Amino acid sequence: MQKKYLVGLLCAAVVLAVSAKAEEFMSRPPNAGPGECWCLFEIPAVYKTVTEQVCDRPASCTYEEIPAVNETRTRKVCVSPESCTTENIPAVYETRTRKVCCQPESCRKIPIPAEYRDESYQVCVKPESCTTETIPAVYKEEAYQVCVKPCSYTTEKIPAVFKEESYQVCVKPASCTTEKIPAVFETRTRKVCAKPASCTYETIPAVFKDESYQVCVKPASCVKHPVPAVFETRSRRVCCKPESCRTETIPAVYKDEAYQVCVKPQSCVKHPIPAVFKDEAYTVCVKPACKRRIDIPATMKTIEKQCLVCPARKEWRRTECHPGQPAIQTEPRKAGSGEIKNSDQPTEASFRAF
Image (tube, rainbow, N blue to C red; front, side, top):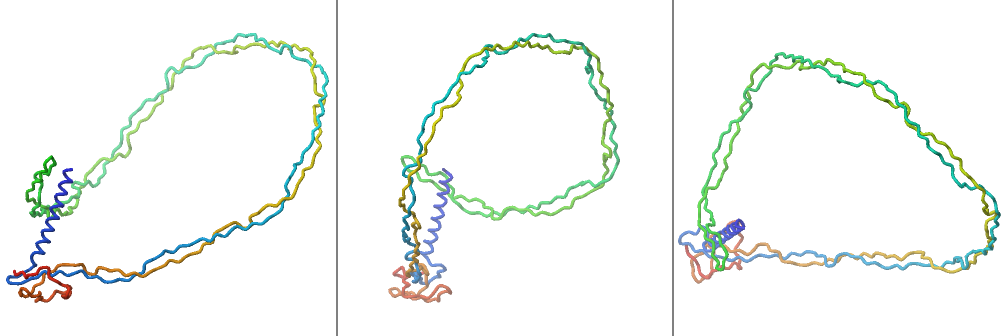
């Protein structure tokens, strides 16, 4: 919040300084010599009339409705659908004899105990391993270049150039209580870096020398000597024939019983009744309704408007000292400033001598 307040104060100070410069320029002509009379002329703005075409009504389009075309056609319509009458014929039954299972077949399980025997197998008492024999590495000498002093740069410092400038610093910021206390400012001087410090780089080549070092021709390795595993014989019980059971079949028991069988199922006889049709008229759309697009071109019109060629301004001109008479320019105008017109009127009624 305080930072924004300081920025606002600085902007206000810049605006006041610019307005003060402008007021000073307008109150006194530039390069006024002693004993000269100057008059401040107010030169009005210059306008010119420009003619241009403007679109009065943009291009558009309308749509014309085209009605659909229908025609009448004839088709057959079913008045009474085809049907049939049903005549029921009763079913015919007879009595027959069949065997019925009174007690289903079953079985009884007789358990047979399992049989075991002894067998031998090998157990690993000590697993297979290997011993390691170290073979030393072989080295040979060879020469190569080693960078004794790497490539570098020397830095030449160019001192910064400073200049003094004045700016306003807020000593006491404005605060807000029941009574407004304006901020207090004081003018301080500080150094501003006009040209920052820099440095130049000078390349210094690297310096090399020859030195000897050892290169591994054959790296260190090891030879493995296998040590065979040690086995011993142990005994355990193995199941030769697992426990099982024998099934004894018990035959099923049957008896005779009577039941009815449908010799001829119930049926029906259908007598067909033909359908009845009649002709009726219906409407068919031969061509559907649509729209036809009619384009309306855009309408243009010519207008005139005023364009600013040269804005109004004020200009100091040196004149002869004749109070009470119209101002007369005594020195020629500079190139590009234009000629004096009757519309150039001084803003002050009296002359001002310097």
